[in-house]
Length: 308
Picture (cartoon, helix red, strand yellow):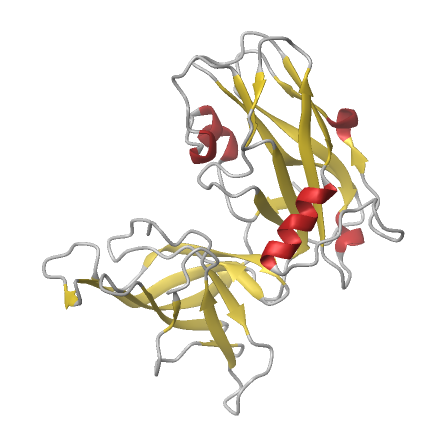
């Protein structure tokens, strides 16, 4: 597979199991067709990080989902059209500069599979808008993203979602930090009303948790999903990312900043080390979020190898 999903995993199963929060209307007999670029987020944006290749490959970029009481009783054909206005709005809101291939001379060539018609097969609830690309074409100074919107459904009796009818899929070359990392040791502290919790199973010291996938979202940024001390997922901070400052200090380590677009309280913990050591390929992270119900997080992430 040429491209690796940068944010969501196990797409097919999650979509078929109706774990899609952005169109969470399963059980209502409404036959609605929607886009859902991830199975666990309301975002209409997803980034795919790619390895270099000179061979053309077919890639699924934007899922389209039938939200209904039952899976599709027939093949459903959904027509997509370019949505450059949606990409412009995303760039303006997020201070990015993604370019849609085909809109500017010199951008990577691609083929839109089936002229942008997505088929949700009978007995299923999801289909995919697909393209054919050569990943080497995306290794340049500019960054590229594909933005498409649902225009119509061929079969009668289906409604197009008013809120989730487009998707943006960025294609980003893997950066030098992308990979699988050993997670820990570390520590989590959880406060309620400014007081450290007592007997809270989600906090405390941990030696190691499940390996962390650090996934390229930019030349010097990586998506990171923190876990509680018991190994469970942390809610409310989806979209946390690590930003590497590409100027090393006198110790040879690169400073690191922790960010998230959806929670302005998340930031580096003052006075604590946040760095990347290229000699050992180790991140040292210390950050916190919240005010009265503050969460304090420390961990090391040590490189193990490339992501599959």
